[in-house]
Amino acid sequence: MSPLIEIKDLSYAYPDGNLALENVSLEVEEGDCIGLIGPNGAGKSTLLLHMNGILHGNNQILIEGMEITPETICQVREKVALVFQDPEHQLFMPSVYEDVAFGPVNMGWSKDKVNWQVDLALQEVDMLSAKHRSSHHLSFGEKKRISLATVLSMKPKILVLDEPSSNLDPKHRWELIDLLKNLNITKLIATHDLELVSILCNKVAILNRGLLKAFGPASEILSNKDLLVSYDLAKP
Amino acid sequence: MKHHFADEYSQVDGILQKIDPRIKIISALLFVFLVNITPFTKAFSLIYYTFILVLCSLLANVPLLRIFQKSLVSLPFIIFFALFSLFYHHRQPWFSGVIVIKAYLSILAMILLISTTSFSHFLKALQKLKIPVILVMILSFMYRYLFVITDELMNVKTAKDARTVGGSAWFHTKVLANIIGVVFISSYERSERIYKAMLSRGFDGTIRTLDDFKCKNRDYLFGFTALSIFIIIKIMEYSLQ
Image 1 (cartoon, chains in turn orange, purple):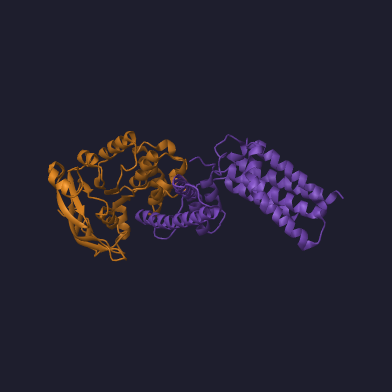
Image 2: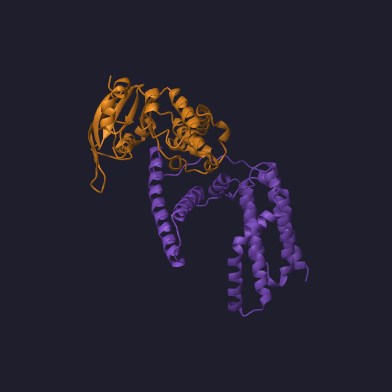
């Protein structure tokens, strides 16, 4: 059986020539929760942006065996959902309902199906009561939850999260960890939060300066202090 | 940071809030049109329109004082145009006074409309009324990010103030110009990231919406009443010399 995500020798350079990813190869199986860790500027967010075709490196990513091309991009975006670090970027519509419905509407679903999925997604993140509120009236923790709902409503197979716990207070951070733990879906999480990784992830990948330095079971990688220290991920 | 949202009275329990936004928009635009075509010689009929506005704000449970407070920001512009018209038309100051009243009534009507309609419903109603979708989207983004960018501007200004010791007024003006530049660039970069977030959720350049407005009897009644009142005012205007 082919892996859910297959990244083969992916390289990407930004227009200014900065090489953000270099020959990154990674396989994600169905049901995996992979923690993508590394210092700032390691290329974590750049890799995530490749997952649903926002950035195009050397096109070496296969989603369920399907190459990301202009012809397959819609199918890919239905399968891979991307949650951005800052909820202000994710929530751009005038109301929570319209934000959560944005993806399903673009997928051309019927009105009834959209309404049903919006309610379901908001229930999953325990924010159904905020359905008709404006996003800018919400607290940061609530915005993070709604951000998650905006992609859950699209019924994706893979959830890609960029720094999900950043800027959250301890209470909201634990609520988010619980929420993610209960989501039975393949996850790829870029984060600096090693505690979150140890709770949620079964595999960990370390990126440093665009290179994949380590990939393996979370218990092995997180217990290898020398490895973490060498990439500035733990105190020496 | 605390903001006063444009639609701050949209969730208040009032008759006006329950009316279909499309009917409200059409009625408000008709109101503005009729106010502005009122001849200068029949300016007394502007009292009737003022009375309608007072009645509407009572129906909407919106404090009149709040509407006036919100309208103050527009007053300098209205006065400027009135003064300009004074020189242009070579007319008596009284005519400029009528221009001020007409413009002011129009703005009050728009404030009342926006205050009592949830902004998302207002946008959707505009789209249903065949306003170009691209304009509606621009309005939508403007409203959504106005507060975010204002917050950003205030945060950068606070950071600047925290490091400010003395300095001339000219120096502070120059720094303020730099701050505006920085916020402009960060807003531009933010727009790039928002576009990426839109793309990742299947946006392909086509704006799709779910329309679910349905006019009820009370909406038709409101529209009919508004139209009748406007006609009566116009008849009175021309019958009374």
